[in-house]
Length: 253
Image (cartoon, rainbow, N blue to C red; front, side, top):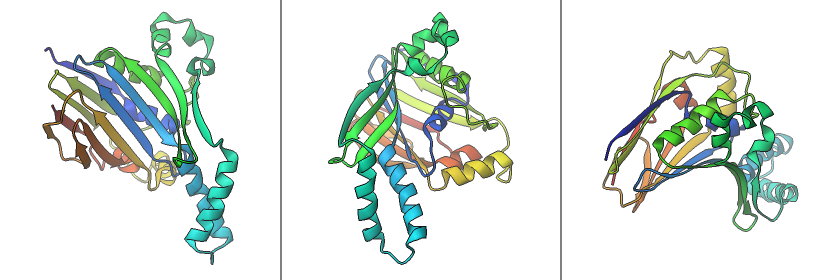
C-alpha cells in the first residue's frame, strides 16, 4: 500500500488550544481502520477542569480545611452546574460565518465535524470537544489545516502569536506515525510563552491511538500504556509548545 505523507503548520496543536482552559487536560483519540479511514476526537473533561479551579478558590478561602472536605463541598456544588447526564451533539457550523459555510472547499470539512458533550455524574466526567470523520489521512490533514486557518472564525482565536510546528502524518497499512518539529526558536521568557505557561501549568495532552489490529512495535517516547490494539501516550502541553518535549510517535501493527 502506498505511503501517504502530509505536512502542515500548527497542525493538531492549534486544535488543542481551541478547547484549552486553565488547568485542563486534553485527550486526543485517533481511530484507524485498515484502509486509512477513521475518526479523530479531541476533548477536555469540563468537570475535571472546573473542579480544579474551584478547589484552588476554596483552598485560598479556607486554608485550614482538609482536601477531602473541600472536595466534598466542591463536588456537591459542581454538579449543580451540570446535568446529571449528558449525551448531545452541537451544530459546529452554527458558530462559523456564512463565508465559510458557502465555500465548498471549507464546507466539506464542516459536514464531517461534530461538537459533542457526553458524560454523567455517575461516571464522574463530562467530555466536551470535537469529533471528525475522515476517509483517509489526507482528509485528516485537511481538517487540521481548516481548523488552524480559521481559528478566529470558529471561536478559537487566543489573540496570541502561537508557536508554530511542522506536523507530518504517515500511514502505509502496517504502521502509523506522527512527527512535529518546531519551526522557530521559542524563548520561555517570551510574553506569549509566559501567558501560556500560566494557563498550561500542569496540563497534560494524552494521545490514544486505536489501531486496526494488535500493536506489534511502538515508540517509547512518553508511552504510558499499550493494550491490544490501543496505544497511549502522554505529554506536558507547555513542554510541547516550548520545544522541550518531542511528540514524535510511531506504531506498527
